[in-house]
Length: 597
Image 1: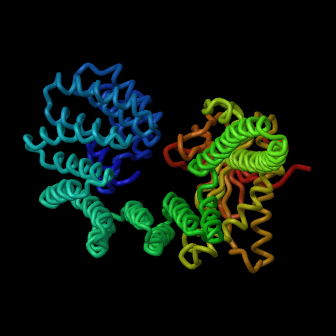
Image 2: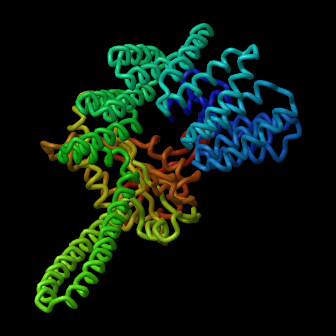
Image 3: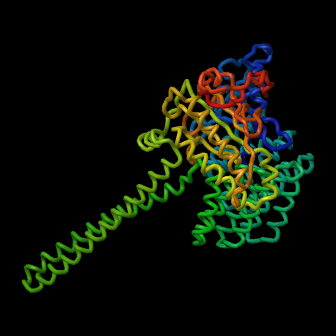
């Protein structure tokens, strides 16, 4: 979530010290209270807080709609529609987001709350801004600012000014963007709101960079970074650095662009920011590709895949599609040109046989070259199509990839009997501090490549890797009767491999110790995202599998009671007792010892 989206959410909920009000742990805790029936008198407010804190937009949307259906007061219905609009906005459904915000506007006007009305205008402006409709965005920002200027809440005015300034920055109206952003920064400073001030300074740095004033740009950016470091908001710092890389890339200064992107990656690696490690590697890959350095571009793209291997760059797919279209247009144009040429030849044949013979020879040569061009073009089209298909199959299960190609979307499916595995390297953070980025990525790739081979051997489905964590499932996208047995066998083989590497002391491999956890039960599986899509699974079964890994010990396989009941006849297990699990209470756990003879 970037600075613009962070400030955008400030208009819908309270602002916390880290700059982002969403808190999935808090949402889970609130849902537990709500479902238990212990808060009958405050259920509406509980629904509102759950919707605000839910990170998953689909879940946030669900609780927003429940709130709207049960609320009676105009102010609470307004809250429901505002959060509903925010959820649709995050899903990229701008039309339905606008519809929800306009419905919120109706209830804000009924309750005669000027701040709520102004917040609706700003939220609507944000949707148009994110949809790159500068005219409409500017219109609604102006209406919202007029109301906030008349009110007493200068902090809300500051947030609205920041959003308006960000929009004018996007459309390169730099003078207006600078004025709005400076005014917002002054309000935040007066109100002792340092995180808002930090984002303003960061945007001012972007404005000066676009204006060509590198000295001022770096000064403001460094001030923003210093303020954000007090809040340990390293995500925003790393993101500001990638913004600078984009700006200098657009200006043609590739050296400066690479410098900023490298700083972003270094910061992300230093603080273990997994999303930023991925995006910074991708940014460096794109910059080196643009500069013609294919070797380095591939290197950073490989690093990007290591940290976010379930994601693909849809821009590459779009370029392939554009390339294919260009070839088809070229082919059609060649046919049109040839038709005109043939008509000229026919006219010349009437004039003289000799000239006709010469033109006939020219025609033969033209046809030969045309056919040669068509053959070459078809080969390139087929090669690009195969690359595109291979890329999809590398990212998604075959059945899911086919469904995505045929219908443009993938429906979520429920699987009743699935086993989910999580692994994690013990002390990974300490290793990361003493290894270079290249050594770190090479070590993780060494282990995960072997895990991929084991997963393929047992017919499992790799879901994703998150830094040093590896996740896979058995029973998706196709049901398996022996899903638990296969998963346990694969897990034991992974553990044996890690122990073997440690004993052999291989030169190119960092010796890690690994924890493994497995749980079995129902899950929901599908593809998330519209631009950088990924096949993923959700549900309580996944959460408990993660807890099994966290409660495991190095070199051991920890399984839940669900998994134990399935495999107990085939594997010897040691009962560990009931162990306290975060947000779940006490759960029975077992260490898998060995296969029964």
